[in-house]
Length: 275
Image 1 (cartoon, rainbow, N blue to C red):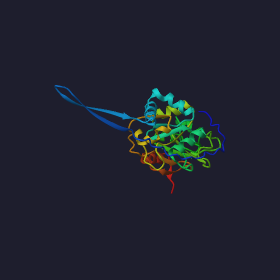
Image 2 (image 1 turned 30 degrees about the vertical axis):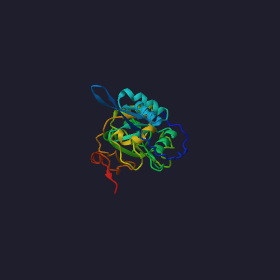
Image 3 (image 1 turned 120 degrees about the vertical axis):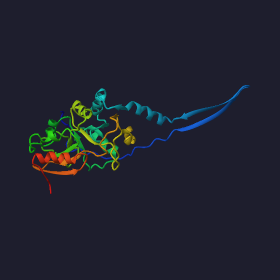
Image 4 (image 1 turned 60 degrees about the horizontal axis):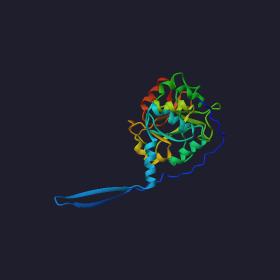
């Protein structure tokens, strides 16, 4: 896992540019009538005039929408390492991901979503032991994180002085939300890139979460690749977000898709819910 090497105090300017819609192609129908001594035939010929911009968009989409399979993991890793944004399926909903150690890439996610910079991004790591490189876990009972993750849970922890996470990600916050999705494709990307991935839902800010790549079609032009994992079964519920900063106490920040399972695990480890 590589360390994040950008300047600690770097701010991320926000420029919101909602995706522009391309004009629809226009159809023209010409009807000609052919006749002979024996028969008369009606021939309908249709021609479609496609604008250059539309043609380029269709071609780009065909090249940049790929199945979320092992065959294309390296393409995703290469995009992450070049500071680009990709769209990926998780065990809950589709997300936008980039290198959490790249200030430029993180800014691109905010710009793409139209998201205010004061709203934090979570990170995704490949394996549970990786969490300790980015957040404080010493106060947690042995085995707790392994019981919650991989899975549809985001654990919120303190960064701590030893975190290698780039400080320009969520500036001013001493906590960080961490995911280890139960989805091999995105975990393989994080593992291969040697970095944490900044991760947020693949939708414009304020819109519904996406369970199908068609749900966020307006964002495709802003992604180097869109990886198609089919229709996800979560019912648009994202991960359950739980604050585990205080020893022995938890606070559910978002119900998400697995609150009952999450609270059950925490209770077994002696945690109580914050009042």
